[in-house]
Image (cartoon, rainbow, N blue to C red; front, side):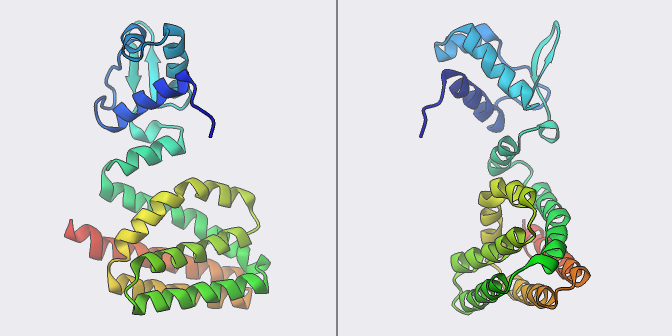
Length: 234
């Protein structure tokens, strides 16, 4: 793995401090002189680090006033947003918004996959569904989550749209974490199995509209389960 440049080190450290809540949205961050002293680097290095965060819309420069932190919703870096979310940024809101994002992307991907999916992919989906059922019976949450994620990954790949898979790749770690939380509830597992069966049946028929509806129903059930079993208890 390549070593980080000094610029990257300074940028990552400042982002970590922002994510940790040291600098809240719309607050002023330290100037070049202070940061260069803290990191024992040149002001040019600090300036380049700040430019990196400004380009990602994490920071904004107000002429004559200084450099300020932007609200999370303004950030233009998915990886930075995921770092902030992982540190506990309004967990309930983030959980709901993540399902909303999945609903927008996965229903379309499932619709595309219905006309493009191979027999081999359908067989692999069936295998993952069987593994989900076995994990449910064995109360093996990690195995259940792994099969659940793999089931969805197969559909994303089968959509034939390279952008869908690329968009979802950075989300994998946080999706795994969220699934591990929700899949602790046996009833959520049961509901997920039923929905995955419906999705597989729709894909097997090769009917795009039926596949889209089946995935949309799954996303609706997932959101309902989140609100009923997880968020309600927080």
